[in-house]
Amino acid sequence: MGTKYNVLFMRDNDTVKRYRLSPFWLQLLFWFVILLGICAVGGAWAGYTFWDQNTVLRQEKIELQKNLNAASVQLERLENVNKILDSYDPNELQLLLAAVPVEEKRVETTAQTVDLNKLLFYKNLMRAGVENVKLRKSGGSLALSFDLNNLQTSSALSGFARVELIENNGSGLSVKANSNDMSFHIQRFKVVRTRFALPSSVDFKDLYGIRLMISTNKDELIFSEVYPLSRVLN
Image (cartoon, rainbow, N blue to C red; front, side, top):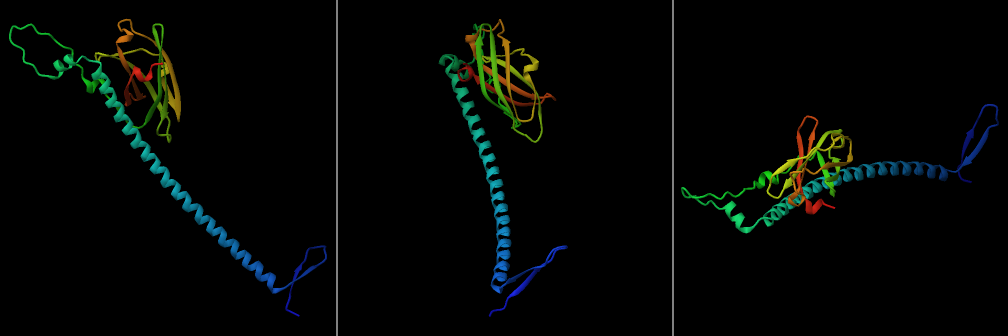
């Protein structure tokens, strides 16, 4: 007969219970506890490793998104330049770009020049993002809407937005929109909607697009971009 071990369980005001266990079951219990500990350590190590890899992948995704946004911005600027150049007569462009000397006592014909750097001025400090810009004409007024995103969600973003109408000749005209509609204090995003009257001195068919400008409460310009009507007009 093999060796067995007695295990006693004693409780107050109760009978003593005795169990007889063979060494096999005790060894099995011992190795089960060891295996359980190994599984716990392995699970903790795997969790930490996968969490670290996920953090690296998230950082790489953010960098790729920034590079994609930068490439998209450059493409849009080139498209804007091409559309503006297409809107001018080739002969007029030649007058604007060529330096032609003017003789004395000759009647000068002045051609209006367009500063493309000023017209297509772009600024993005990656603190505010603008998406889904839409413009709709209703009678003598324009309805504007866009999504404003806070790209630095660690802190709230407060400020105001401004709108400028850009004519085909390159001149800009500021419009007076409702200040309550254009001001914001956001943690993540806000849908901005406003309506403003079309200035009487401007013909809608002479408009090239609109410029959106986002500034902080300290009047720091953090975003500025021109949107052609062909892209945003509904």
